[in-house]
Structures are given as structure tokens and as C-alpha cells.
Amino acid sequence: MRVAFLTHEPFHPPSGGGSAEAPYLVREFVRRGHEVHLFCPVFPEADAVAARFGIRVHPFTRWRMGRYTRLRNLKYLLYPSALARRVRETAAEPAFRGAPFDLIFAQHTISAVAAARLRRELRIPAVFNFLDYLTGFMETWPPWVMPGPMVRQLTRFELSLPRRARAEGVLTVSQPLADRFAATGYPKERLCAIQYGYDAALFRPGDSAPGGTSPSVVMHGSFDHHHLGAIALDGIARVAAARPDLRLRLVGRETPALRGFLARLRSRAPGLRVETTGFVPYETVAREVASADVGLVPYEESNGTHCAFVAKAVEYLGCGVPVASTPLENLRRYFAREPAIRFSEFDGASFAAAVLAWIETPAAERRRLGLAAAGRVAAELDWVPVTRRALDFVEATVAGSLPGGH
Image 1: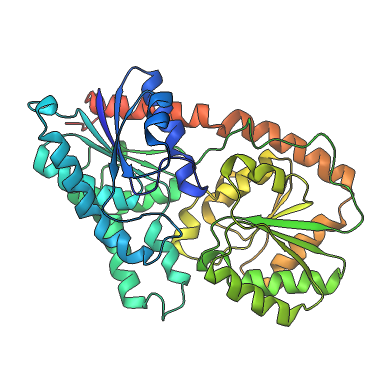
Image 2: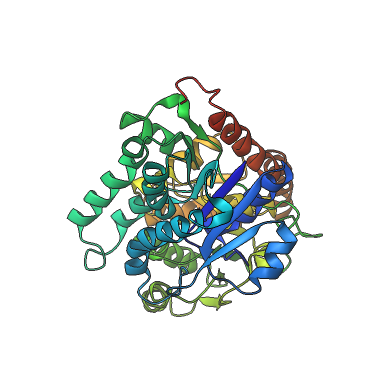
């Protein structure tokens, strides 16, 4: 197949979160003999990266894109129309006339909006890959950032997108998200929950257990508002009160949300030792994580968090680090029998109790449970099996072999 692969994030280097998946999916497309045309924001050394992956890159250059760029949300709203125009212009080139693409593959919600338009205009099969319920995360954003009525309108729009676009297939990061699409009337047989993967060659246990007598807890990510709510603030402050020797490491870019969170945390726990690393490339995040005693997933409750397959939880486990998490629907469902994760309730006191329970667990036992979990996630959630499941579904969908396919 000739594939138009659409994404709103720069392809390389991956910055974590959803962007980490794209290179592995592209590699699997190419491994299977498909011709990949990548439509994405411009990124450094694009020609060299294209040659290494065996693809053709059609860079978007009208304005800067990225999760940390200024006016990010406005740019995300404008990007689908501009991206669709970029694909249409390419399809009109002499080399593409007649049958420009066999498949439009949209990575994430923002690109799916563009793909929906292109499917209708170009009459090319489209598969949407939802790496999360993007607008669902906004439910926990401060109302002055994202007013409630606007959030509700956006969440309805996102969930109805596959049905309204009549997309040939939909990949989702979780079964709860697939269930929500099905509830809108989108055919269940065209849905495939693939979960979210990680690179087991990068995220692996250290050669020895974390050392030192002071407990160390870690959290990594993009540090948006939904990562750093009341549960994180109250929970960490309570742990610090119980363990004055606590060390907190925050791995990721220092965002306005993170700076505000740290100011509030320091007022609650002035003696807490906090280390912020700033931006860390995806391939080196594991080194920042593996030396911790506990990995933190203190998300607030929302449709977005319930439907996510939180990458940090999988990556903590891949490094052999036990996890304390709020009871997010998909994590709790997928890891129901995983002893290396302890789920709290959706409140700071309960979350702190889960973290303290891990800290009080003997280091040898934490190490034993962490290593066992690392082996399990490597077998099930390394990018190789995850992307192969995804491409099996995509190929079957485009071939029309799924029930109800067209």
C-alpha cells in the first residue's frame, strides 16, 4: 500500500507520550513492504531520518508545532485544515495522480480531523489511531483555561468523529475508549484496542536495586494540568510529612503547570527535596526512572484519564519500579492482577497511603516484584507486538476482510 501517515507531532526525535509511538508504527509499515508518506510538522534532519526509515517526508512548515510551542491549543485547532491542504497538494502532484494513496492513517485526534475531510474528498480508506481521549483530559483543567461548556462540546465532537467520518477502522489505546466509540453507534467490529507500548530495549531494570536510605519517588511526563492536580499535591505533601527524608524527582520540561504546582507544593512541604531535570530525550528517560523506589501516577478522575493507557505506568514497570496509581479504569482493568501496582482511591490521603506502603516494603521485595513485572510487560507491551497487532488490523481493514467492511 501507499500510505499517507498523518500526525500533529514532530516525528523525530520523539518527545514522549503519544509521539513515541509513531516511529515504531512507521517502521512496521515499512517492514511489511508498504510505501509510507509522512505528513507532519517539520523536524531536524528530516532528510536523514527519512532515509534511515525508508520513507518520504512531506513537512508542514507554515507555523511551528509541538507540545511546548506558544499558543499550542490555537495551533492545534488550526492544524487539521492546513494539514489536509498539504495532503491534497501532494495528491495533486503528477507522480500521485490517479491513485495517490491506498490508505490515510491518522495518528491521534487532531490528525483524524484532517483525515476525516480527506476521506470524504479523496474517497480513500481511512484508519484513525486514537492514542487517548484527548479532549477528555480537559475535564480537569482549570475553568479559566478551558470552560466546562466548551469541554463538553469538544468531547462530544471527538467521540462522534469516527462515526460521522465513516472511517474504515479505528485503533484505540484502551478498551474503555473503544467502548465509548461503540456507544456512539460506531460498529464494534471496526474497533481494535491495541493498548500503548514502550521500548523494552530502553526501559529495562538497572543492574542493581536503588541504593540509599532516603526514599525516592519519580514522575515523568509532559506535565500538563491533568498531571498535577489536587491528588498529586495533597498526596506528595502527605508522604513528605510522614517521610521528611523523601526525594521527589520530576522528569520532563518545566511547564507553567509544573512551576505553579511546585510553588503550591513548597508551601505545603517546604523541606521536601525536589529535583527537576528539564526536558529529557525519550531514549534517556529510563535512566532517570530506574533509580527510583516508586513511580507515581496521581491523575485526577476524568474521561481522558480513565480511557488512557498511561505510558509512564508501563515504563516504570519496564524499569522494574513499582507503581502507585489512582484507580484509572483502563490501568485498573489491564493490571488487575499485577502485584507491582497499588491503586489508591481518587484522593490525596489514599494516594499517599499507597506510596508509603511501597516505601515501607523491604527493598528486596520491591526489587523482586519489579523485576517480575518488567518481564511481563516486555512480553506483552514492547512496541514489536503492539505495532504488529495494529498493522494486522489495518491491513485486514483495508482489504475489506472485516465484517461490515467496505
